[in-house]
Image 1 (tube, rainbow, N blue to C red):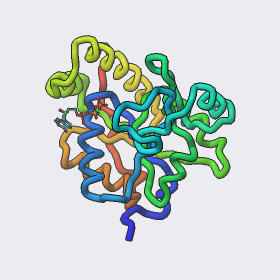
Image 2 (cartoon, rainbow, N blue to C red):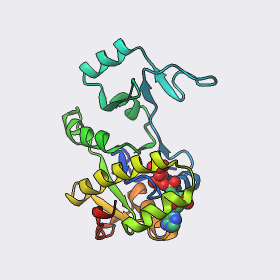
Image 3 (spheres, helix red, strand yellow):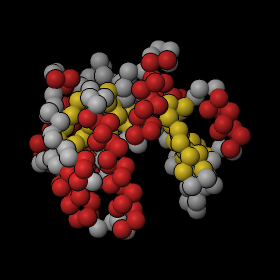
Length: 215
Ligand SMILES: Nc1ncnc2c1ncn2[C@@H]1O[C@H](COP(=O)(O)OP(=O)(O)OP(=O)(O)O)[C@@H](O)[C@H]1O
């Protein structure tokens, strides 16, 4: 039996937050605890498959013409072009996850597109927008540096993107905020929201004072 409440299972959970906040850490723990209850959708891309990649598993590989035709048809809830290739998530890919609840980890541009495109669907898609916040800008910088995965250039890019993510959060665009101060505490709140347990929509923290000038 599913642990996810039927009242939220059709509502994708969109986990937003700057790179280095701890999205992967918390989602990995959630998926490990509830295997098979949540799903990540398979994106479409115009890039060529790499060795070992299978159409429909890592990505749906399509031609540029087909991709743009699908954009024209309004099939994408979000899409973007990186390094000369298009990437995007279709509404169909997301609905195909049922009965699992979809969790989306998309960038700010995607989130903004979904805000506009979601309500236009029939039936309307009602995502829950969750902002996973670092306790402070200092914590964010330390975590990114501490992970040891980034070059100077990629750190610079991630911090610039973080600034835009935080500025968006400061406008109050998200339904809920969870501060990732302590993995166990934040993980428990995320679990309550993701499963749609009683009171999930009241869960959450106040957005901390995030000083974007430090970025
Ligand atoms: N509550 C926490 N306290 C201290 N360190 C944490 C906490 N949560 C995550 N971290 C550490 O912060 C670093 C960044 O976490 P993670 O890789 O999960 O971030 P992310 O938001 O998924 O980033 P990206 O979007 O770049 O994948 C990791 O080294 C992780 O172990």
